[in-house]
Length: 100
Image (tube, rainbow, N blue to C red):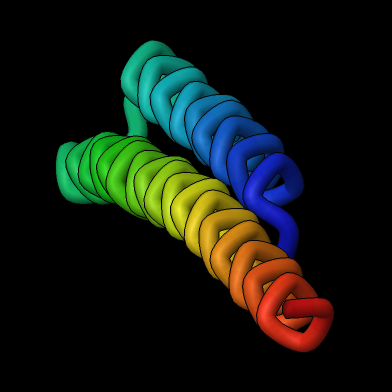
């Protein structure tokens, strides 16, 4: 995949799971206000914390992977340009030797 797409996907992943976790937290609050058992509220809070952590971890991993891929592509482009310049110099040297 393209690095910019991965960066955007990572940001959207973080935002999406943050919104999901906020829904879990709101649900836990609503359950607590309405007198639901403690284990239901606790589970909603744990699911909220879990989705928030998973979103940040996977989102940041995607962003980091995309930045590394982008750096490799830039380094590969510089290497390609260096090799092309070296090949063109070799060809001009060979042409110069033929003329002599």
